[in-house]
Amino acid sequence: MAQNLKPVAPPKNNVLEKWKRNPNWEPEVVKDYLNFEEQYPKKQQRQLRSWVRTVIQVLFFLFLPSAYSAAFNGVKYIFTQVGKGAAIQWTPFVAILVVLLAYTIVFGRFFCGYACAFGSLGDWLFALQKYIAKKTGKKPKALPRDTAKALSGVKYVVLTAIIVLCFTGLYAKLTGWNPWDAFSMLHARNFALGKHIAAVVILVVLMVGMAFEERFFCKFLCPMGAVFSLMPTLPFFSLHRTRKDCLTGCSACTKTCPADLDLPESGTLSVRGDCFQCGKCVGNCPKTNIHCGVSDRAAGGGKRSLRGNELWFVLLRAAILLGLFIWLGV
Amino acid sequence: MSTMKRKHKSFVLRLVSLVVIVAALLTYNLITQNRLDAEAEARAAAEAVTVYDPLAGDVLTEASDASADTSVGAGSWKDGTWEGEATGYGGPIRVSVVVSGGKITSVGVLSHDLEDDAYYSMAEAVIPEVIDAQSTAVDTVSGATFSSNGILGAVDKALEGAVN
Ligand code: SF4
Ligand code: SF4
Ligand code: SF4
Image (cartoon, rainbow over all chains, first blue to last red; front, top):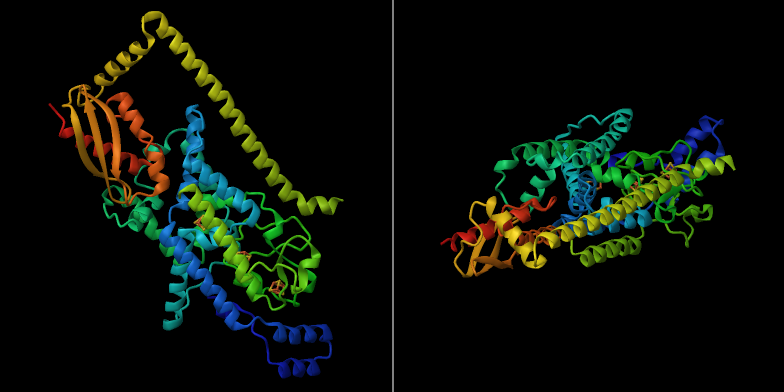
């Protein structure tokens, strides 16, 4: 998807040429570049991964589209009950919420990267826009990084607002505004949208946003994403990089990341709450420098370290998620 | 040590916040549950004083309460099994309503094929409410409004056939 963003290796002789012309160039840099070429992940590998991801996304989209709203209904339900002074029952929504949060604490936001219908919709709309842009040669301007960073705080405001509305009991009076309702009704081929005009309009606006900015809704607005990103995700399966082994001046991972993330350093408990676990950065790192876990030893793409985009690992996480959803009756 | 702290700070902060929120909700629930239980007991005790048979009294007051605010008066239906259909989240929901002695005694859902399971299982909670209140003028299950309205609508349709 992000072909135009991947770092392009200059041809070997060109690097050597440059080095000859500029003896101040550190030999390290040249070595790095040569390594880069040798180690560059094969294009087919990347294509296979992105294909597998799309298949998983399509299956979840078709068969389990409501997991996102069910889990978020759990949040709304809890605060509505507290607002009313009523007891919180163990309802299916609460169960889905709790299980999905526990899953996220262990595996990170794999749900967002592979299973959320709204997230997948965003990916496809963005891919479509890119395809059209490529055909027509007209590229829309990307959002400046600072703006994007600032906007990513808006989702916490959305979450807080919804919680307050639920707590005060006002939320129940706001029918016809929830874009998710409109999406679910359309997904269920129920076109009686008369009472949901506002929701449809908001949905269309969001979809336009999704098309022009990768993961627009997820990054900036999604209240469930806000909850996910506040979870204390364990570092074992979330992504880290060994910065000192990076290619000088490289930022391929950040550029390919839908959320523009700088991954944290290996060996720390630090985790990027905004990471969707899409795995794009892992396959795009020229030094195979991105990996799961806290240990420094896991770095360097050694045979026994878990990089996080292995096919078996992706399929395993998808299968566990699917099993949990079936068990919960989503 | 201080770098250690910095490296792990955000994680520890998140963990502590989560534990605090979960603990707060559990405590809240415990207190609320106790309060509700105490209230229910107090009510039962009060009723036991005024009415000879608390059980019969219960049913009586509830039935008369319900008839006060329903469009179709409680107990005004023909005995039998009545079927009705209405649209829920994704499609039709069919129910059968059993009326005996002029009262709704049971509501069964015949089909809800296009309903999402998570929503549908939430919405089912309206059925005992309908039987309790002998009316469809009950609160919908929040978060599962479409499916609840589907069930209530289908019960309404079924009762139309049962009107005396
Ligand atoms: S951020 Fe929200 S919409 Fe996006 S994938 Fe996650 S849950 Fe879905
Ligand atoms: S950090 Fe990597 S896995 Fe996470 S969202 Fe960015 S590209 Fe995807
Ligand atoms: S981790 Fe990121 S910055 Fe470092 S080499 Fe890999 S892609 Fe480049």
